[in-house]
Image 1 (cartoon, rainbow, N blue to C red):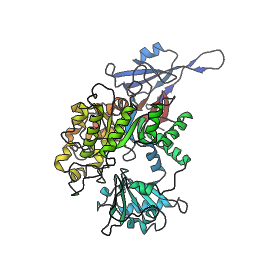
Image 2: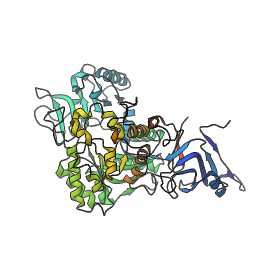
Image 3: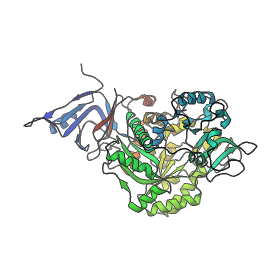
Length: 554
């Protein structure tokens, strides 16, 4: 009996001497969604040995046209274009696999238990690093302190990143390594040190303050840093991703990617964003936009930071937090610094992508973009982006479309934040938060992603969240602010063609069309035919990049 999940047959060319594999492959499936308006659904696709699509159509027509082709018969499966995560952190994902995993820990006690288990594999004196804690998941819902860690780890330095990467939790041993006195009233630029009534640090460092502890850590060796990239990329392809926009890559990390690409060790495409107004941006200005000959790596974008995150109350707000009176959040870069960096990027023809979560952060970015574009927004192909665009004032929401600014958004942020987001911003401001439908209907283009490891690397969770606005249990019934839902097609487009467009790559990937790359995913189910509630549980049979399988399910 034919295996209903995966059937492959090869036809070899008859030649004098050893047989040689055909140069053309024809893949057939129950349906292939191309994401192309002119030919939205076909049965078969032909591509050459370089991974370039040659033809699409019916199975019979393509087999007749290419009678000696290698055959891939996916049976009753559905094929879609390769999924692209428009905002993520590959090294961060890899490092979570090399450090203590604190995601979904339901209490401080559970955090300590996980840390104590992880510590057993560490040598004496090594720092204990972890990521993923979220005080919003704990009964008390308040920031922890160094004292919570000190009893279990009196001597070993412990440094734990919050789930969003915008706050860190240190024990006393870790704070001893900081080179300056942490007590008093002073605060670092773009950050906040939480202090007690005696003006002593509690162990929580928000946004720009995190660098104080990070800089006191022993530097990571190159082998570990490269391994983190490899682990992150492998996890991505296992979940159906063929591309990732890596949001914030240093020049040193770009060189690690280059070494991997030179060795043919990149299983997917990386669109790297330079990490702010630093060495990587300088290299783009000096040497021009970068593309690796393999087509698997490019850098043509700079990632800037306007503000912090909502979960740690660091997102910059126009008015105080509804649940923290007097707190307006944090600007990580001042409006002046943002304006300087944006102007520099424009001079160098570098795409700008700016992290902005609070309504003040978004307003400052839109002002900077409008000033730099000076009426050219509609006539230049700038494709500038706002990363997250999470809380927008009614006045600013339509400006993204007006300025031709891409909203790079992460659907699972909404479903993760919904238990507490309205507490942060109140009943009026929440209407302009996670406003996918309003933005799309205004004419703005939505590029969708996950922000992994802040959220899961799995794009199926993003498709599900976009179409249901519900958690894994389907709650709340009907969805959270359901008027902001996307259709399954719109969600899929956000993870394919629109994500490709946001990376200036729509001529190569994002849809399946003649001349484009054969990047695709084989699914057991049809995401455009099932109930949106099933999107979370789609079965990834295989992931292909350039016509080669980079992942196959066992």
